[in-house]
Length: 486
Image 1 (spheres, rainbow, N blue to C red):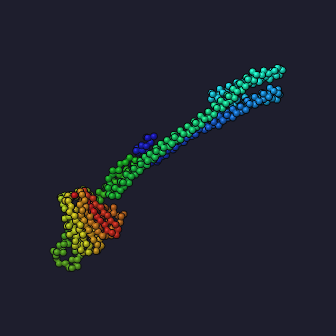
Image 2 (cartoon, rainbow, N blue to C red):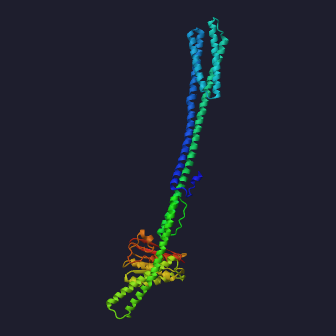
Image 3 (cartoon, one colour):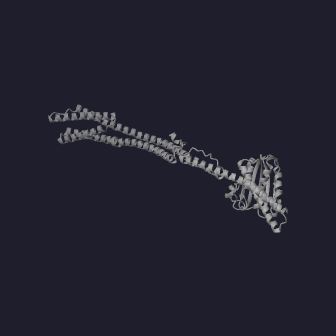
């Protein structure tokens, strides 16, 4: 039965596992029912013997006692009156006695009962012979021998009555023994049935758990793999021992991951290539525009200057986008180099706040700094500045006029925590998990955003051995935090 619990083999389909489990449970139930039927049949046989044998024997014992008393009564009356009718009545009682005796001999199922019935038969036959001798003497006109013959008859009658009483006692003892066997069989059947039921219940539960786990565990692995795919991890490493149906599904997942990984690589290569190809002409356009603005290409009108300024600004924005794409492609490919040194995060935060101060003043947003003295942190100063600029820039972008942006740094044991909190519209709970993914923005974000800033933040922080997260409540602002090892 233990082998039935081993469902790790991939040969069993889900259907076969469920069917096998149901069959095992049905076999257990059938076994319990068969045992119960066997015990009930045993009890029925004992009860049958009590009702159809022992009770009948007791009735026959009563009939023999009654017939014997009738014989005695008719024998004594005949001895006094010598009436032939009394003789016939004696013979009828004797026949009744012998009939009951023969029926008892047929039903007798023990040696003791048969021996008792045999003795009763011999004694009754002896009593009948004595009576027939008396009848013959009377017919021949001879007088009956009185004292000796009477005592002999009385002795035989007493012995017959004693044997009948012993026969009744034997039958009653047999009934008592069978009732005890009934009680013993019932108690045994109840105990065995309880043990079998408990074992069957535990085995059924264990079997059900094993079958369920053999199906749900691989499904759980597939579910976790689906979450990894949703987060952008396309490793084809789903190797599970499962039913064939789920094994085929796992194989399909691995094939899908390989294709998605290839597509993601092609996409990254495309972004990297396009970024490289775009940066040079965009730089040329920006520098050429600046040359026109500086008057190196001749005099330009005010209207032309306005257009040139717009072209220069848009070129700078496109170059910044291209640089971000290049940085993200290098980070995903593991090619971006970091220059680690011991830095003071408070100085980097002060520098970042100073850089965005004019933009905050233009939007009428107050910037607050809450900086504690912390341990020096191993980091790439320029990349951490990039993280701070992205987080503070986002906070300023989404904070309305008159709002507040608060930048804080705290030392937490072996880590340094930096948080940027705004009083903007907040992020819906359903979108918190996607804001750090590339090309993904919250629903309230401006359509002019690229969705790359927070993705770059995450890559840089993780490359420093830290972690980044966001806490937000709609209508009450957001707080972006990251920690770095101190």
